[in-house]
Image (tube, rainbow, N blue to C red; front, side):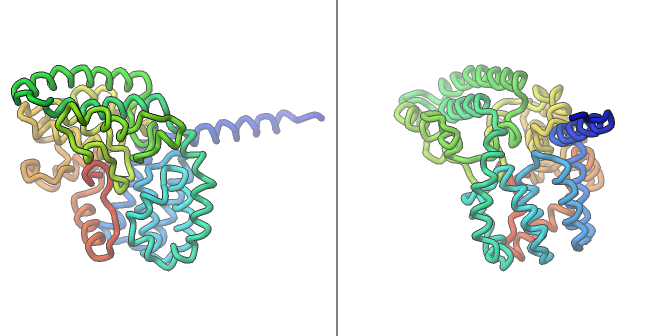
Length: 350
């Protein structure tokens, strides 16, 4: 059978387009989310056109952030659009949605749209799960869980150890941990939602990897360090990866260490703008004042950071691909009034 040249060209073009879909620049993705959020929450553009914009954005990427799917699903319910709700639901399944993290969203679970489709949603979760799991970097996930678990132990005192000795020991241990993290980042990329998935306590077991999750390390360290079970638990409500942030927070000027890599890693989709803001703002709060006051995002919500005009902070946030302060304020209104969940990530700072 002969295939004409034009058919070959078309097939190659389609293949390139499909491949490029998974490699699109995530600077564009995050800026699009920022604009959509500002239009809905700050400017009050509460029409179904917002849902079309979310849908078009999600269709342009294979990996999207689960939190954005959850926001879009809640807005679809608010606007009474079952068709878009189901599209966003399926996209969420391919990016980490589970029945466990879904259970944190009462606004969704109590909606008529969800109840009508509940049986179909259960089947779709199972059907789409392999796509999500196939994307995860198992080696990176295992190593980051290990370093995180060791850090949680090392920062606490050993039995009979003085506070001074504990702090000195931890300072030395942390430098080793940070070096290990940076080596992993250089090899694989920043460990975030895209590479290691959203927080899930039994994800390694689901991947067929045993004796490597946080509960395993708690049992390993509990008789030696003054630790608690809560340090080795993950909050499924975060619908995000939160393992990196504490590792960065436990050292001074962490943003400066990551800064040369951030633009490239953000463009790849490996780190969320709000996570960059968390690390950056924490550096400003540190005793060493590693960051200029003029550059803060006020993402941590501390009065200490609110020393600039709202206009300047909003300018910083726009440049950092984060919605306005006004949008964040309206999100809180929607949360309080409708029982939505619109803040995600480490301690709810996304």
